[in-house]
Image (tube, rainbow, N blue to C red; front, side, top):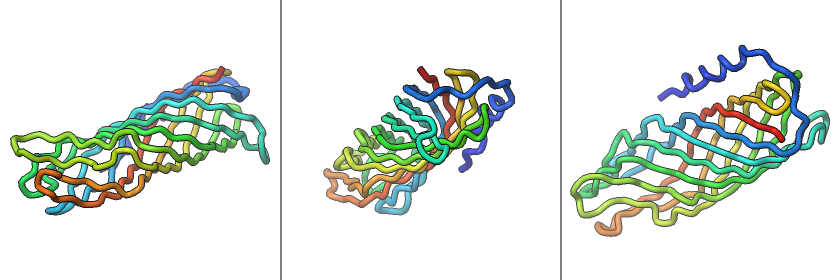
Amino acid sequence: MTLSFAALPALALLAAPALAQDDGGLYLELGAGLTSTESMPGLIGDAAFDTGSSFNGLIGYEWQDAWAGLNLGLEFEGLWTLQNFEDELLGSGSSLAEDFTTSAYLFGPKLTWPYSEEISFYGGLGVGFTTELGIKSRGDAASAFKVVDEETLLYQAKAGIRYNMGANLSWYLQYRHVVADTVEVEDDFLLQSFDYDFEQDLLEVGMRYGF
């Protein structure tokens, strides 16, 4: 699986004329991208995923030149991802697994280095919790696998580049790595289960608007 073609819209944006850096303060971000999720270790072999999609939105506040020329931001973010299973059978006798959906909220800091008036580089960390880890099944079997507890701790690290289009508007390209605590996946009808260490890699493009 490859995520490289997600960068093409961002490369086009980087060729556009730019204005000045924003002045910090409150901002909103909306983005979308591609996801690659760690295979799920089913009872009859690993179940791989196709490349999936992600959507995110956040509200943040930034203090300029907070430390050693870096800007400090604090962000509260919502993240949603969807991936189809490539290998759909998780256990003998169970329904086929069609897709895997995640929803989560995260909070954390971000440091930004204003390289020039147009370009900034940033990195951030976050911690939060999932509100959905859902396995959608299909088929005629009487049983299906599901995540026992869909609410679990989630951690992330991200890094990216932002290109300023004006005093309030900018575009970004970022990479994100997300890890959750181990969850149990079970078929309670056939009384079979396994543990899953959930990890995702995401490549995203989006827009930021400062107030």
